[in-house]
Length: 184
Image (tube, helix red, strand yellow):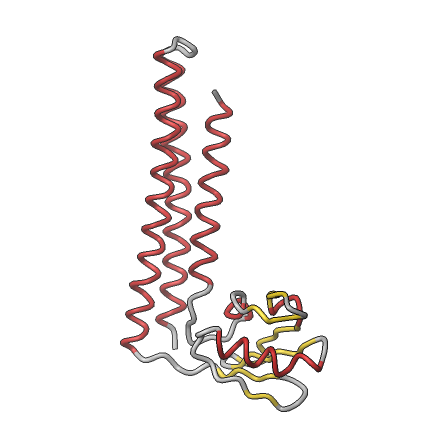
């Protein structure tokens, strides 16, 4: 029965990681290489993640620099960034691509905060669904007399503790991300 708790915990961890990844993709006023994680470059007919074809650095708070390993890819990388719908305007100087990150308006910040809160709530719902599934399995085991009533209650308590732990972790990620968005 402890396997149920272990599997539940792993699934909850994946839910938190997914929410964290989704929130990291949201562009704030700061330059971070993770902004380009979704960009795919057509490399010999295969869509390849940009971070596998180029070095991505943030030398300044509002600037990303993309240095392709193959200089012949500069044009393709530039097209991929433009078609990535990131709201960024690449500047190609023949050696590197510079991506200035524009300031966010207060309205845009509020929209982003709403989006981050929505992603956090989706994560919470996912975690609660995992808890529900684990609780159902525990109750079925109790009805089938595979575990005692006391053991069942102990496992239900463990499930709730795991749920609380991961929801708290998700709330901490949300708070940090909101602060990032609100920062100038």
